[in-house]
Image (cartoon, rainbow, N blue to C red; front, top):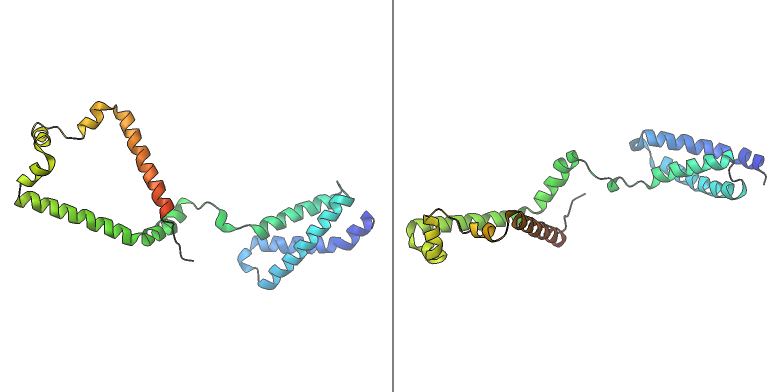
Length: 188
């Protein structure tokens, strides 16, 4: 088959594919199933024609046009919209609430544990003030009376920059490990 005959026989199909694809790109929600099937069939024919033109008529206008049409068709037909990185609006409107609801039982359990510990500690300190001395020890109690916290020993032995970066690194590794252990399950 010569070039002129190839273009004459196949250009109507390319024009139709280009028109359908442009209409589908402008209004993707309005594409019906039959129209999508027609676009997919024409896309396969364009791919075939592109391969033929690239091998027999390289560098011609038809080969370039078919390359562009094949690329446009590939992008539109194979583009998975879920691969896009969601923006801040999507994160706060959808992703974060879904994650919050998915982990709500765990958060409730953590809050219950913290509140229980707070209530038990406060009631124990009110009812039996000597219990704190038994738990902390006389050295810690004396330090508290002098106005020194036990956490000051952390920054006096190691420079604050080193200890804070170590704490931050530990916190990040714990959060990454917990994210791997509990995958987010979304509905939809």
